[in-house]
Image (cartoon, rainbow, N blue to C red; front, side, top):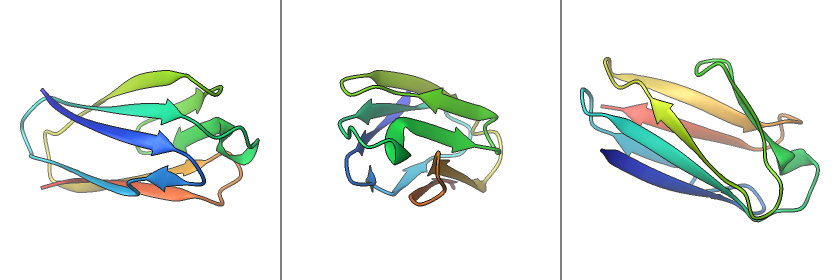
Length: 86
């Protein structure tokens, strides 16, 4: 299982993560930022709308069947991140 960790603290760290196509994958979002803007992680591509409090960690499965870019953002559309499957 490919696993990437994204720390939410003044944005997304790292902002871009990479996965190999065809291998099971997941992202773990760790919330360390108390600001309202970063309280949510949203992605139309993943049909994702996560609400995270400080100290929360949530795992999201990623479909890696095809090479593509998947975008995600904060609830206020100020901070952005990207998942690249290659």
